[in-house]
Image 1 (spheres, rainbow, N blue to C red):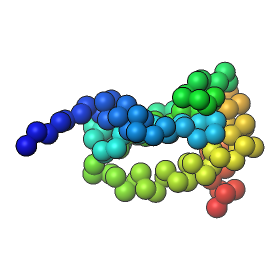
Image 2: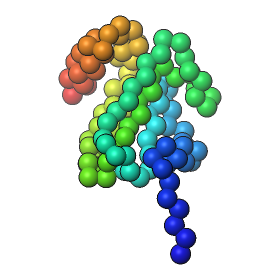
Image 3: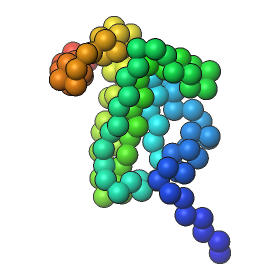
Image 4: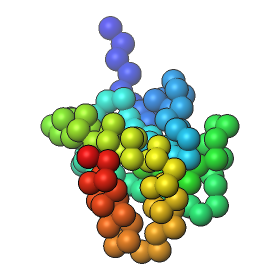
Length: 114
C-alpha cells in the first residue's frame, strides 16, 4: 500500500485546490489534516484587495491545528466565518491600525453576535 505524506504547507495547498476557502472579502485557508506542529492562527489584513481565485480578499486567516487540539477548529471556524460575513464588522476590522485595535474589534464583535 502506498501512502503519501504531505507536509503542512502541501496539505494547505491541496485543500485549497479542492475548493477555495475564500468567502466574500476574506479567506480561511487550513489543512485538511490537523498536522501542524503548533496550533495557531496567522492573520493578514490588507487595505488593498488581494486576488484570491475570483474574489477580492482583505483578510486572510490561516488556521493551523495540531491533531491534539482539533476540537478548537470546530469551536472557532464557524464563529470566525459568521463574524467576517458581517460587512460592518469586516470594514471595522480592515481599518484597525494596531494589533491591539484588531484584537479589541474582534473580541467586542464576538460579543455583539452572541
